[in-house]
Length: 322
Image (cartoon, rainbow, N blue to C red):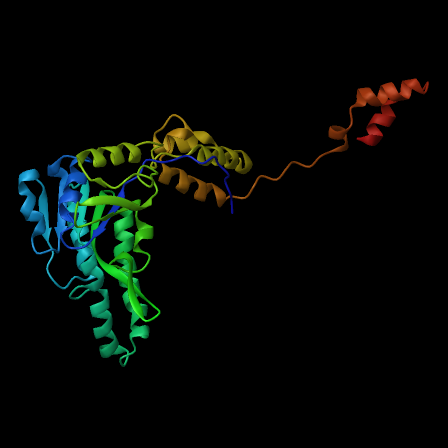
C-alpha cells in the first residue's frame, strides 16, 4: 500500500445547503433565492413534496418542478434526483427532505410496516433494511454533480426540568446526524424569516448576525465553492507517486502518455491517475543489480595506498581481487 503525504489544498466543490425552520419561515422562497444566485432559473429543478409550494413563486423565474407524491420512500427521492440531473439541472432544491424520514412511505412509516410483515413486530431488526435504504438516499445526495439545497421542517425541542417543560430550541425533522452531510445549514425563524447558520464549513456565516437570505447569498456561496483546484484533475501527490512507481518498476512514461493521448503525466485526470497508480503497483520492483568487488573498489586509490608503503601494485593483485 502506497501512502502519499501532501499539503492541504481546497478543491472546487458542489454545495450541500440545508434550510430548516417551522411552517411559514420562508424555506421554499429562501431556497429559490439562493439558487438564483448560483445559476440561472432555467437550470434549477425543485423536487416538491410540500403540496405545490414551489409553484407559488413562479414569478421569480423560469424554474422547473418535479411533484413527488407518496410514498415518500428513499427510492422515490433518488429517482427524482436522477431525473433532475438528466434534465440538465445545475441546482436541485429538495423541498423537503422531512418526508423521506417522517412522511407517508418514508423511513419511519415503512420501517414500522416492514417490522410487522417480516420481523414479527421487531422494529429494531427492521432497521437493518431501512438504514440501508436511507443511506442510499444520503449517498446520492452527497455524490450528485449538482449543487443541492434541501429544506426541512423543524419542531420545538423541549426538556422536563423539576417537573416543568421548558423549550430548548428547534430541531429539523430528519434522521439524527443529517446535518453532518451538509456544507452549511441555516435555521430560519417565522417572524422575520431571519437566517442564522447552525453549521458552516465555508466560514462565511458562522459568526454573522441573523440576516434575510437573498440572491447575493447564493452568489457569495458559489464564489466560495468555485475556489480551489479542480477535483477532477490529478494532484501533485498523484503525479509524484506515478513518477516514483515508473522508476521503481522500470516502466516507460511514454507508454502512459501515448495511451491517454497527453504530453505529460500532470495532464492525467484524477481517475486516470488513480487507475495508473493501481496498475503500476501490481508490478514487482526492479531488483538492484548485484554489486561486484570491482564496483566497490577504486583501483587508483588502492595503487596510491600501496605506493605509500613503497610497494607497487601488480597485475596479479588486481586479477585476484576481481
